[in-house]
Image (cartoon, rainbow, N blue to C red; front, side):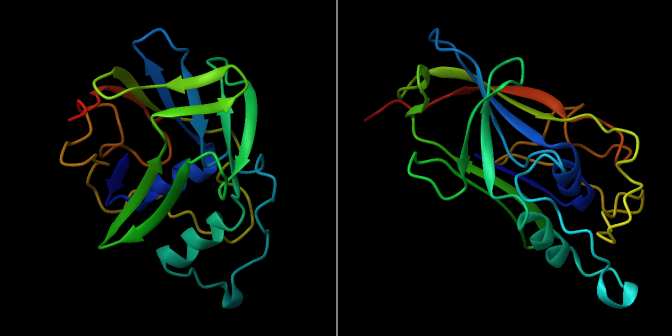
Length: 199
């Protein structure tokens, strides 16, 4: 799964409020969510609170790497957002998550096995040809999210480039990560997916 956007403020929104990718198989398996990044302040390693040297805001990639350095794990949650377990980004369950910046786009990527025993009886059991709903949801902004004096420079102002976050070739639907007032609109949408049949 790959999401990309030219609006860098949306990527920082994920690091501030947290981001959950929901999987709801239509074969009777339970709905589960994978949370990454975690909401700022909830991650195991708190984000550094130092000022940038000289008070100058570094470029986007440097700031993104700064955020990523404090995000070393992801969570598996149920529909109540209750944490079932957590894993290091470097794990042996076959789940790979990364965010980056390339060719002028902020990119969010996730890879998971079709059949993955994530925690105990909580199993994401998908086979070729199966259908499922794939949801994307950010957290809510809270008072004080923009008042921290850590010098991180989220860049959430209205002068950021436009362009909605897109999947592989498909523009995100209205109400998703499109061109909205940065920093205030919650991200919440879902798409239906059918896995390719095995040959």
